[in-house]
Length: 622
Image (cartoon, rainbow, N blue to C red):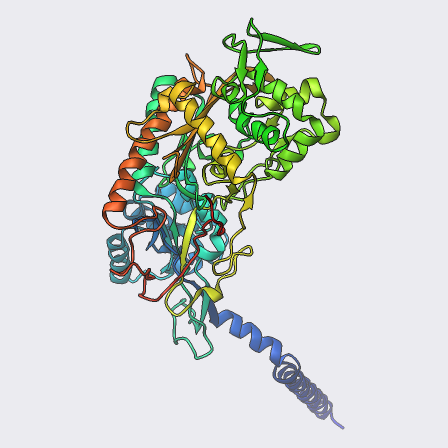
């Protein structure tokens, strides 16, 4: 065999080896492809389909509109308007230079600094919010036209709402406010958030790689439901009158804070509620927490002399004193009880039991309290619900601060509570207690929601909120005999005619009331005073009750001087309002005039509604 033949055989052998190797490689790759396809099509099929669905399919939640809040005349106090939010998909817009250019272009249209927009576009998120609540809608249309004309990818509007309060700070603490997510954060907005909030629906669709929607909802989608409307017991004219009265008080006496409450004694309906300082409902975030605090329910205070009628009730019904009895109030204005000395502003000598309250003698009330005794007085306070919250339908109500029975001592605790110390509760609790005197002995739980109006296609059987279903409300409780209530009313009438409440007199309107002045605790020490006055009218058949509390007034600090004039102004306003209501044939000021001509209420879509008003349990009085 020649040398050339050997070379050719060697080349042929290597060629066959390479061919075999290539064939085996091809077979191996083919087997791997088959295995991979099997893995994709069979083993991981469900997971991969789910991932694809997640990438291209979307389920968007749609929230129904938040319900409106109306006053008792049908005037809107809070409602929602469409104010979409602008969303961006940064990865679809481009690189950082594109982000910077877009931020500069949108800045003027959105009213947001370009640096803020650029910061949001630079976030490593698939989707970011450039601005919430773009308003008015003309701005939305203008921006959308600009997006379409310039064919900008990755920008879209999503449905959102803006809560509007057309009256600014009017009844701000009662109405409350919502956050950026339309969740209630205070007042009625918080307490009834579940009822007001729109119910979530959902719609499913698919998007292409550029985030464009490519098909519509299917039959399994659920539509959103609007929230219920709430009609409050607040009367617009009385609310304005109370606000003006508090403004005058603040201007003259410069207190740290002030509270005003107006109620209908026969039902417990809150006709007006106001606080100073206050805040603008359109910009709650700019207010300090102290401005947003609803002191009517959050701040317990020692009531001072306004507690005296309830101490006298315990003594009268227990048979410890009679109306004709006289009490030694001392000839010097000072009286020693054990190791402590109790003082009166004036020396009164001996006073009849009714005049102890009319002249507001601390010494006289201490003697009456000691006649009752610690155990009996504590039990009487519990029977009158003085140790309980008012159960008002507003958030954040503070508990009553009452010394435990086992710590009571005659010459300190008992003497103190007899003229309004060593016990603290909220203005709302005090107002509700006085309603119990005014209406003949029933303590009615105060309430500010008068009626729930369901959205179209629903009824109140769909509404469940904290045990409030249909017309169910906390029941009232008898806290004193009818005869005792009328006796106390007569005494309180004398307080206004001849005693410390003369500044609350209203011409042609018989007013019964009581002043209260108490030193207050500030940072663990006594500093300044709380001044209060509570009154109801007409005394013979009360229709309205007013309480005003001033915390730390400057200059004068007596309740009859500081708070009584504000009560008078509010009563005058309420009297005029009641006369107008009667002229229109509406006897109950807590029943509003909205609805049809027959007086039947209608919801916003024309459907019927159920009343949530509560009246005094039936009982015939002489």
